[in-house]
Length: 397
Image 1 (cartoon, one colour):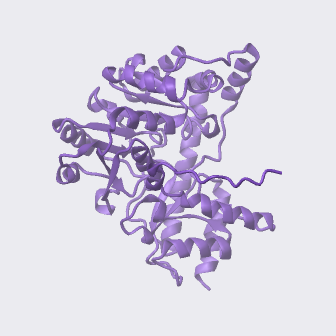
Image 2: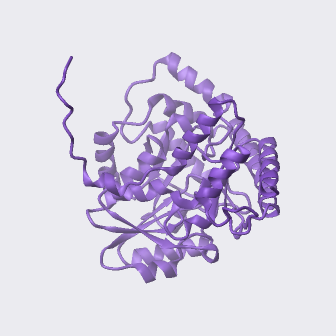
Image 3: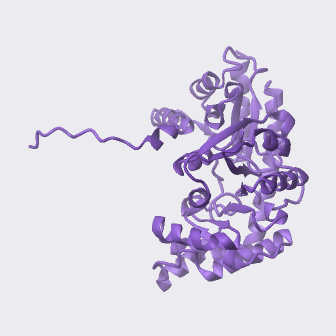
């Protein structure tokens, strides 16, 4: 038996800048309750209840049988990059050079590569508060400083060009946006996004736009940030609209001048995205598969159109109706419950007393997060109805 004590290792200081993902802690509690036999309705994790459709799984099986499972080019399989470019043409009317498309190991890898390529030590990057927590952590991982700007209902929980101008200083390097957004499900109005891009460009900065939920838009035809110039960097994913979360596949669109830098980073940090997932994803763009995805998009819209008025009937405020993704960012102040206005305590009560998982605002920002909860309606319609019934019973006690 080795009695030598394990030495204490000094961790890198960047670890301190990355906070825990609180939703995962709540999920641990939910799983513990489930192990005791409790029935828990999950409306916390942002994962579609739909999985990859049959044409995609069939393509994966075919690729596996053909043995196309070896390393690919660090930028991705050429056929997939061309298919993504064709998707921009068909969905947005945009001409995108396939050479600008970098296939990545999920949108997370795409965001990390973009930040590693553009953010220097101490650079400040503007983003809205609330926002997806990992986005600011990617900036921190690149030794940059995320600057969270309070963005409330009046701004649709998004940055505005005026806010960018007001908060830009000598240390500011760029902006990192998401449209539609997690946690709010709100998009940046195209005219406002164009003004943001122009404002950043005038200051010599970069604009990164996370568009992973863009396929799940409900009230208007979506407009990609690529429409506003070839210098804009966009991030997308096969996880949400394409229902391939665990396949870990995404992509970047970068300016021509960035291709070499991103390729070098990708070669060293990731080698390549999963070859099997890339060959399977080619089937995502077939007409029969797109028809499946569009039917699923309409089902998400149906769920949104149910859950927003249902939440309001329970006393939640929904100050901005989400127009995309599968989230509602709801104000808890009007709920008839002792923990109203304290989203952490309220979500714990909803879990333990009603068996419903929702996410407190603490994950998504630092400006008044205690008021808000995030609800994911990426679950079956019948489960949404049952969750509303359970919460109604809880709030009537």
